[in-house]
Image (cartoon, chains in turn yellow, cyan):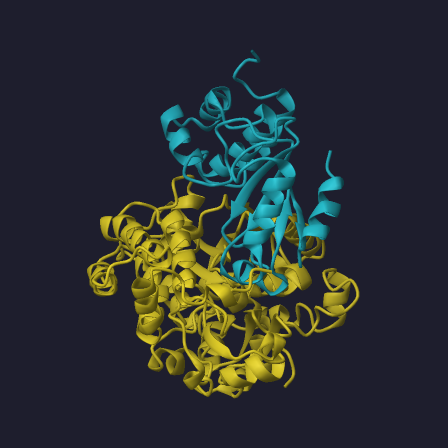
Length: 425
Length: 158
């Protein structure tokens, strides 16, 4: 299958505008400027492009809502706060083909009538700041960005805004708060950002990978895109594959591919010929799945039906030496650290969950602890401002569901039953 | 003690940054990065200086600065090591790398060496999980770490 998003990253000087222009660069934008904004929205609607940040919301629908709001000016925010543990897909686009993102942003801005945009970039990618700023300057110098783009009356600016190390800012309303210069805490919805977003104005927040698809859709048509991969969720996905596989890496594959293909064909199977124990299909917030799910297709709906979520399509693979209680505890430590503290169920609940998990992992758990984990999950689920609290339950719910015996063994044996087989390096 | 104001050159840079946003306050993160660079950390003087240029109360600036993990209110080492120990790195040995770093630098996670050469911090996922285990030293990124590789890397930083 031909790559779409990463089809240029292997080229020499792939970041430069000349290489980009020599390989279909900015052709989608030229085509878009010859269409009405509504026609551009319709083309993307036809493609059925769904958001690649994790929620899978139809991109064209978001643009349509913002376009319909009479308030001016409107903003486009590119969510490049790629913080979901296990995820490193957007980085491949920004480091390897920054103009693909820029072109997608200009087209998106034209489609729903935004004049200004920001790329909210995670702090942990310091080198990407200058890569993006260099590409922006190149695009401005050639007339693909700035005032009166390619002689049209459409003007559009892009600024890079570096975050400061808060996972929650990947949530769109927290990102907006952060961009406004505040603590990045989620806002209650509604109102939705498409109506009341950054600086109180209509705002579309799109993920890097979502926007990078846009030039290709304009160039080759929505119908072409809709025919790739899974019908309900077309296109490709950049899968970040990590953990105990022979060939970890980034793989752009059509939606609808099975986990078995990803782990065994592309990932080369489990390291050291060991057995697969579990895998996380979509970042730290996604509940783990087990070998019986290997034939599940990677699309939002199929993974949801299997009881997890595709999220950011970051797969972490674990072999049979892995202690699942430890995995849950490690991920919970992350959520405790990243909870913004605004709402009680998340702030207190994640702390409690971590205490229980640490206690069990350390061999001091009590038999009622497993039930208490379940009860706590129920007290947090559906009761938090934003998806962080819900996401924090993923690691607990999956491991308790599939590895309850392992939890029980920790409690009964008062230590980790896998300790001797534990791989530390 | 140096006065709680930015150098003229920094002020120019700040004005340039502020022109990118419709409100002065939106420039708070870039201003805090500059403040940290100029004052060594986001201490009281840095907060005062930032508060003045932003037109935001010092308490408010403090609230923002302490919310984000990239800002330090106390002085730190000349080089900052961010060792990732999230799941993917942890599965591939981040814990033993932490032990190695702590032994080698004779400090615990979160501390600074007595000569001020290194501060050791853990990172919650550096977004390079396919090359795990990884770390960041200042703005430089290192992947596929082993104890030996770490020794080589550290030697590069004064």
